[in-house]
Image (cartoon, rainbow, N blue to C red; front, side):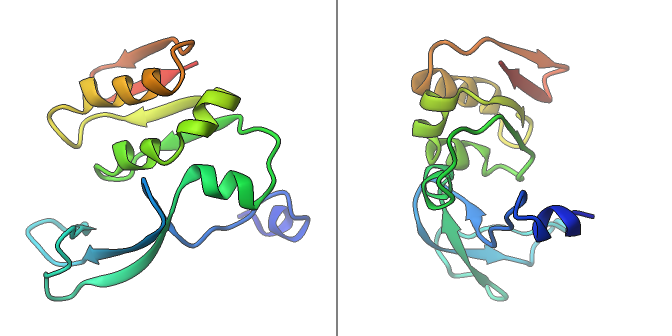
Length: 134
């Protein structure tokens, strides 16, 4: 659905996992759920290796003057992605909508990460499932 935006270079596809550091991740595709997950040990059968990068590196690579909006529902990796975007959060203060229901402490940890990067953020939650930053 973004073919014209990609052709005009207004949208750039980055084939990488959003993470707290660059490198590779093992992504397990098997388990009790139908969704995969990051295998930090890299030991599960059926693992797929993917490239990982940070928000801050993408902003530098694309030479972006600012970031306006970030939305995340990335199955528990939100805290890792935010840790890799501290400079972007500090400098651009993008509005954000982030899911906080994947880990029991997401509702506490995710706001702490964001406010540590930029204490000017104001936040509110919706039903304990999402937190909005502005």
